[in-house]
Length: 171
Ligand code: MG
Image (cartoon, rainbow, N blue to C red; front, side, top):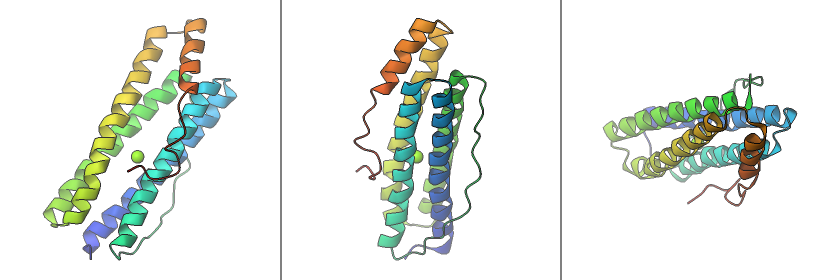
């Protein structure tokens, strides 16, 4: 069984992932209001993916006969100055999540929680991808500045994100 320290940290991470899901959902709603429907779609798929991350840890804890403790999720930020700011905020969030995963990995290592280390390796790899994607979108928004036709192209590009991996923890 996982040590109490590791269980506490994993429960906190479930909260972070579900909080992340909630944040993306609020970002999606903002983009929808601004008529950036492609962005809204992309963020909604991302929200589902974060839910999947939370559920992956949720399931892992139960597989390890540990006690899942769900905590309160804070109300997400719902107002932004622009769609660009939404994605800048998304990038900041992903950097924060990566730091948390790294600390969690360090803790699991100290606690000799080897199964948790293997589980967390997936998350470390995933965070590299999450940060890269968010950084790329922010860069594209900065490139197009406020050129309306380029903004619409970018919105259309984001509309193409597949929801296939959504809602089920990716393996
Ligand atoms: Mg995540």
